Length: 293
Image (cartoon, rainbow, N blue to C red; front, side, top):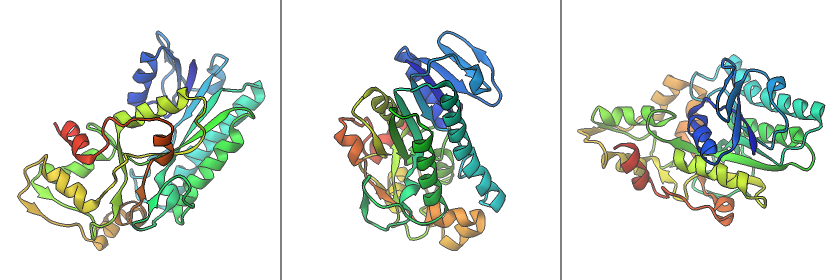
């Protein structure tokens, strides 16, 4: 298949591109800065430079939620980087009367908002807050942009863990210095997934014609912040444990603290499991033993 990938130079995209090439797919990556091509892989700076037809769309583009404080200006950037790219893709296909077989669109478990200890599968309601509204609107933009007849999968991503990128280096930093910590009460849930399983799940959904709708891309065993701390202490020699109080987190990162760090979601991948997907790292100890090695 000819796969169009946005966000291909990001943390997930860097692992997804070689995995798609290993399946002998032709891959076109939409990039702001690179315009080159090689054996079955090209980078284009404009959609008009794409060769037709496109068989599959994987839309992961978007400014990071964790890179900066959530000022009004940066929240606008976060929204427009997602919704703007998605709408541009829709306009591209409308002009060319193309119908990709499948459209996999990024989203996140922020869709559910804070819902305490409730186990949340894909049938759970949309929550409240900036992240919940962002995910809701991004999913709706994808539904509107995808041509009629295109199968749509909405990828509600959890916290993607792996060495060398994403959230893990920041999460591991205190442990590497001998300090174990959790955030606030430590009772809030962390719904995580290994990057390898993220890539494998995307490939699985792309290749399974019966898969459509929302899918939680999280490991089947979410953990509390305290449980994550205990698992990390098995990988790093810690001398002291110092919980990070909620007021300190709010002072450091602002509004983002309440939506992404102090509260959490206990998300389960019900639809993904029912589709027949098998996790290589279903529990946090298995994942961290590899990542921290």
